[in-house]
Image (cartoon, rainbow, N blue to C red; front, side, top):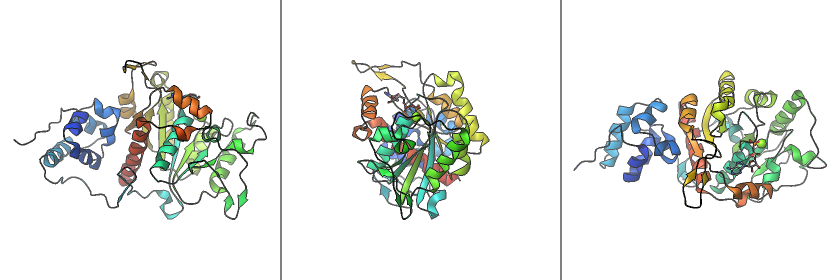
Length: 345
Ligand SMILES: Nc1ncnc2c1ncn2[C@@H]1O[C@H](COP(=O)(O)OP(=O)(O)O)[C@@H](O)[C@H]1O
Ligand SMILES: [Mg+2]
């Protein structure tokens, strides 16, 4: 009997039963198959959120589930990289040395922006991609500490050489220029902005697939500088379940939109705590991933649980020793979101 996939079926159920349909979802511009939205959202709901043609999608899903070719998707043009994610996009940096520049942003501090930036960098690097992290939080730098890189960068032939983590991630952070890591950087906005610009233009980043820019919290000078002076592909917004209620994340999204930037995706951090019996305790309230997706029109890239190990490894400068499925999912969805954003450009 022929397979019948309908628009009211849950995305997760469809891809579990017919794994070959993952490429149809992705080819139609719906990256939710691997993320948490997909585990609750129907095919029609997912299509609506991403403003896609649900009928064309359902038609292709049925075609592929029945062993036929999809007709509504463009084939990937390059060999898959790493975990099978095709890297076919060409960003604004394609002509230069850095292929993609993405800023990580959140309305307020302590949400886990620097942690997500660091771990996203680690996951991408593990896939064989070349990654640099520019710590744009000049007055509250944390990237060098997470990666345990110490020392002062020196000037090479092509500019300032960034320091490298053990795993090979290139890192540039204000920490590296302070005599003591506890010294405060007492600078006004314009100096902070000029330091960020220098970290971009005076540093010899070499060949990079991704330059991730960790931004300070808020919507002030530093995020504005990054959005207006760096050739960004877009922004990833980090939120936590209670943040939507505080409206801070909405300000952040509006700032990106005002500056004509692009939200590539949303990450919900501290989404839950896994209890000893395996159940999920939503400490900070229920997820609002679906609302964030609706607000931004961008996919929910991952929901990251609260994990004591991450915090401990970060404090010890051993972020690269951390492994988790959620972060691999985040990196995979991040690459897909960039690819889709590139195609729509
Ligand atoms: N999912 C998580 N599980 C456990 N600890 C976390 C998690 N996310 C962040 N943290 C911890 O919370 C603190 C704040 O995170 P950080 O990334 O510095 O936030 P931000 O850059 O947004 O200010 C850090 O000590 C970090 O290790
Ligand atoms: Mg930070």
